Length: 358
Length: 192
Image (cartoon, rainbow over all chains, first blue to last red; front, side, top):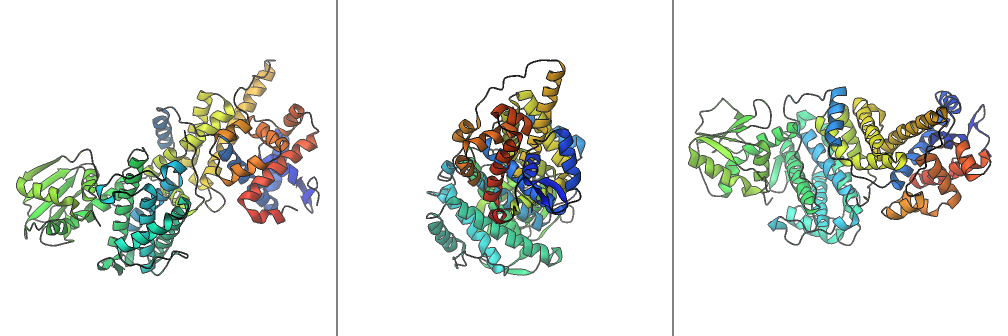
């Protein structure tokens, strides 16, 4: 078939005309006629879409990025929100949504790195000698481990170690011989496998046990730990590459903060600080209404909504700062105010990073 | 601004699209922060006017936020989709301006700025599409640049290059076809 002949037996535009149309390079009346034809010709429409996608990628490849003026961001966001009001944040996000949000953000962050950024060192002392590439390999290894435990292993990932440290070391050694895009690809495949599986299982099965580093763990906990860790390391990558740190969405932070409250007794236990029967209330002033939870320091996981227990001390602080403290990362603002037993409050806040090494 | 390498996975973009569809305000921020440099850069490259580029940038993000279902993750990348939206609006602006100039009998404005070859050379050398552009015959590259970045119709391309209109169409089709085949190799058997 010649490229000037109609592409379909009954007539219609030629392939030349479809390409010109995909480039928006027809005269207006010609474009209208082609548009009308494509509305009724799905085969031709598919070809046109392929050409139009190619036109979009051509533009993407050929035009250099350019920093917009600084004030454009708020103008655009304000105009967009005025055109369509965002959904209200009424409650904490499901661990499924928290996981998929932070993992997808990490994938896109890594996908945007320039070749020179992959070799930058990251700053946490426990990762001395690690580069951004090593962090990506570490996150991919841990996500593929969860995928393994959910019965959806990632094809082509050879690591079989079942512990965090061993699996990370093996994955990093392998990825140091491979292009960075392989780590990004493995992370995305693992995250998608986990996401697809947990969505299929649904909310009702989030309390089922899954094998984890130190034994069977509720799936909701495993997902939140993965999200927490991924967000923490995404900010490590952002600092290493000169990007601003990014907080999880408010609805995710509520879920992450309330879950982390449940681990406060474990944080204290690691520090060999014991206060059985004592109760702490956390109140987070940046997480919307009723963002307050009470924790019996003698019961790991025993977090309750505020108002149910007799409280020995109340700690008011930023939820974001609380989560960053749990991750042992700089928060900029670790200030808190305590009412009641201030010494207990200080001991609790001091213990927050105790399990960050995991 | 150093050019980026783009990973071509689809899952992360699908999650972002779903978050946008759900009205998640943080997804709107993520969308802008990730793609504003590209959208603004493409608009600026096409329009050679900062205010117009800002206006197009705002239109593109508002349009996608207000109607997120426009983007179908299985059909292409979000970057390609935003590129199409940006280009279409920019070309509309160029043609309205040209029509106004014709009505006012003014000479067309000179379009300063780098040509495509110079732009590609400055861009990051990685990427399959960029590699494909480098292998295109000059005649096809020039035709694509005139149509895409200068908003010319195929007739205007023919006039500028002093070639028949049919030849202009063919050059545009061959260049675009080559890019499409880079993106989807299975297409090479299916054009006929």
